[in-house]
Image 1 (tube, rainbow, N blue to C red):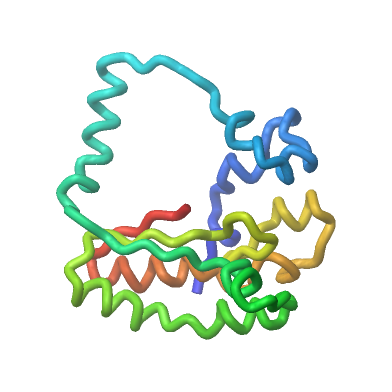
Image 2 (cartoon, helix red, strand yellow; image 1 turned 90 degrees about the vertical axis):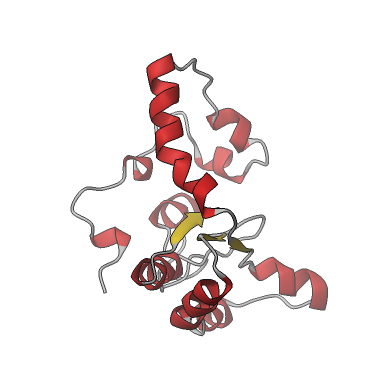
Length: 161
């Protein structure tokens, strides 16, 4: 299966501006640092509304927080990289997509990672800036891409958080 890393055109977000430092990626205030205010023209606002109209028409969707720290916080468990990768590998994306279709969901949203050191997708930037091995904190499996492919076959959109 083709992953986002194999894509011929690299995502420009994978080559961040020089002012985004490794320290900034660890800061709880990084969101504010990355928000660059800008005013949109009427044409830009209309084009934006046209792009997100599907969201209104979808009516509702499902959202998942797929996080390592949920189990860690609730049960005092500290994950190892191998345990995290086994957890990510165990997700049956076809079953999730079938259940979303059965419920009539117009989209599925999933977290890549949030407030914890583990991510359910490979993350070359984290590996580079944190100086860690592939699969140490980002999973070896690209779960969001696998889920996207399963949902796409069923006509369901996906959101990443």
